[in-house]
Image (cartoon, rainbow, N blue to C red; front, side, top):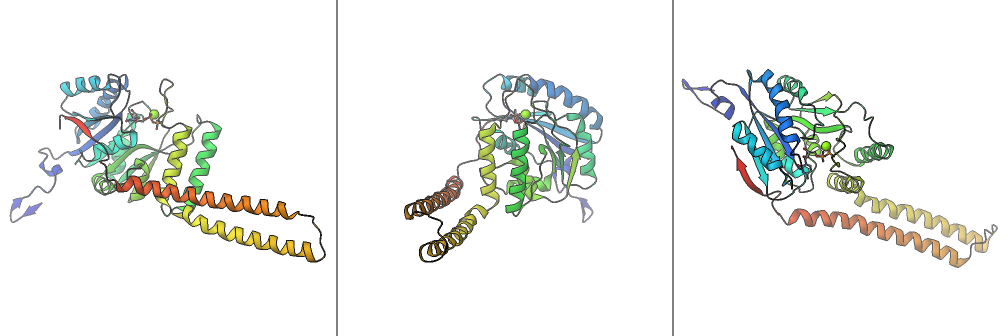
Amino acid sequence: MEKNGYKWATNKHEFNMENKKLISIVLPAYREEKNVPFIYKELQNVIKTISDRYDYEIIYVNDWSPDNTWLEISKLCAADSHVKWVNLSRNFWKEIALTAWVEKSNWDAVITIDVDWQHPVKYIPDFIEKWEQWFDIVYNVRPKIKWASMIKKVSSWLFYKLFNAISEVRIESGTTDYRLIDKKVVKIFLSFTEKNRLYRWIVDMIWLNKCPLVFDALPNPEWRRPSYNYIKLYHLAINSLTSFSVFPLKLVWYMWLLITIFSSLLFIIMLFDKIWIVHLGFTNLAIVVVINTILIWVVLMSLWLMALYIARIHEEVIWRPLYIVRDEINF
Ligand code: UDP
Ligand code: MG
């Protein structure tokens, strides 16, 4: 920036002597001792092709892996000052590990990649190219998942249909965490404080100028159990629905309406049955039992829905830190 004849540096980018743009590549790692050096080598091959135009840092966030992941990362840190390392104090789970880097990076763009080979690093230049064309968020979308099970496909389809029907924000199906976000997106991302979070959906919420890159992310390798099994996916779905929409609370009102209409109709039929033409032969006890069962179901369902939100409020108001850092190396 030119001002009164002096050149003022307004951001980190302008301090850079060669005026290269700065790119952060972030890799959350849990039980990845084999993959940490492997993906580093792969990254070097790609970085070679862009290093004349961009400066870079590689941040490994070690989510307190019980294996030798830390050792592999520390070897890379000692050998290459571009490699940085954040060590969390315990296992905070992938979404939080992904969030942990954001506070560390003050760079022009950030790219997030899984360490387990699922996200082919050869596409990094494509992400950057789209970003240079003024997109703030460049994200990977899978064309069609061939390797997922039928149950997973159907439940995923149902979830996205339901979510987009009842929530004010739209989320896209088939997207992955393999993303590039501009630093203005990082800034907005940091203002989201919820503890129950999914990185890609918060980014989806921010929206801005998005550009999908369609290519197949690979399935989880056989030796790795996916972070999300069916039970975790169920909790994730419930958490997401309750954090993006209050429709389930309003559902109680719809149920009340439905029961009112249903019981009024039943009451009218019973009147006819007792005093007039038709004789369907309901016993009084049968009618009472059925109505009571339905009412109890509605009351329990309503309580469950409210409990979901109260649990969320409880989690959010106790203001614990999102994550705790034990070490930061090469920063
Ligand atoms: N990961 C993490 N903490 C965890 C679990 C996973 O940082 O508690 C990392 C993992 O090392 C990988 C990425 O998050 O780089 C994706 O994890 P995973 O493959 O288990 O997730 P999925 O492929 O099922 O989404
Ligand atoms: Mg994986």
